[in-house]
Image (tube, rainbow, N blue to C red; front, side):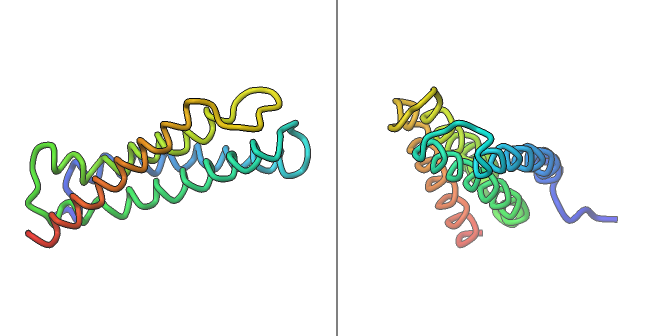
Length: 137
């Protein structure tokens, strides 16, 4: 029987599904925040929400990309960008929100906010690569 996914897509999809479990546990932290059991500033609550939301959405988007990468003729760095770039951005962007807001009483982001922008740039390049790859296949 022929597989619906390439080995690369199947393996990355398995990792991404497991990673989604970590987003679920992050939801428990969000419950602690919104119920007042965590002492955070309004800024930290907003960044925790943004980080949690970006993590979930980007991991699901990375899953959606896998069969589409298989439908392209991309190779090398271009295939890597299309296949794994969204997944890496799912680490960078939420990480930027979480790490930029760490610290007791913080009301402004620290320098690690750069991770959000780096992740956004990687996301844009990865999705553009996949879109072009699909249009030229």
